[in-house]
Amino acid sequence: MGAGFLALAVAVLVARRQARPLAAPLEDLSRHCQAVTDGDLTARAAPSSIIEINQVSQTHNQMLHTLSELLRHERDFTANASHQLRTPLTGLQLTLESGLDRDAELRPVLEEALASTRRLHLTIEEVLRLAAGPGPAHRAEPDRPVDRLLRETEHRWHGLFAQDGRRLVFDTAPDDVLVPGGPVTEILDVLLDNALRHGHGRVHVVVRDLDDALAFDVADEGTLTADPVRLFARGHSGAGNGAGIGLALAADLALSLGGRLGLANSDPTTFTLLVPAHAAS
Image 1 (cartoon, rainbow, N blue to C red):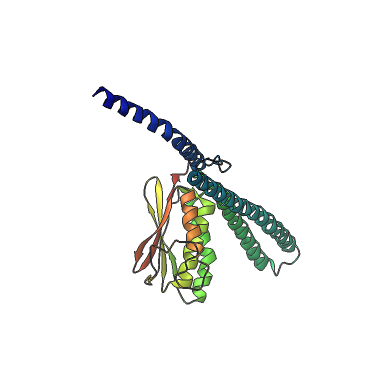
Image 2: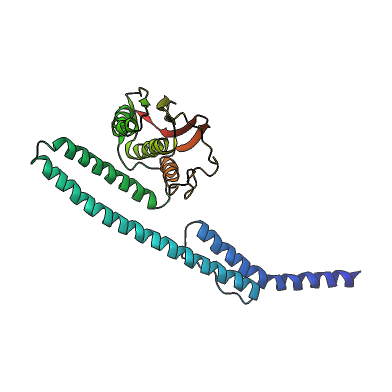
């Protein structure tokens, strides 16, 4: 009996000693994986004397290197886009502003063109802000009254829908509620562009007050046949004639505000944007 217990104790000690060299590199790999999960892309797993674990570590490190390079290229593209887009756009704005004082007959056209360049400038700023990387929800622009925001949106889009023989209707919005102006404007523009290109009949924009949030419903009289699951996937275009960026970008912008964008109904097609809001002080 005593010999049996002694043999068992020896076997346990030997097993623990043999397991330690195997467990140590796995624990090290686990720590590095956790560091990557926490955002440290410089973490690298140490080599191991165990061939199988060493192969996993090398694959892990190569994956991190590839990922770091992809992110570096993305950051470089963002910086390049920031410079290459902002500089000529600023020059165009200055030229249009100079023209306002020189030609009274063209003044309305120049004012409209200048307003368009300012809208484009805001669009670029929102896209670049979103491309800067994930982070807590924040506002890139001071809040604006929702009723004024809707009036400006209706003014921009009314003519385009009229040219297509379609009506664009905005319900009256609360006049004492503020929303993040820039991102909400961009999202509404995406939804209206989507309705103009792919929708049918009258387009109706309704704003519902949900106390600490607002719901923007954008509905047309068409029927959505695309897969709702893939609708907001980047690169997917239900009509097959676009890059599939608009709705994906709009959804990302909504999330960056602490809100969300979704398909509320497919017949008639209705998108709903939920965004935080607060009363004007």
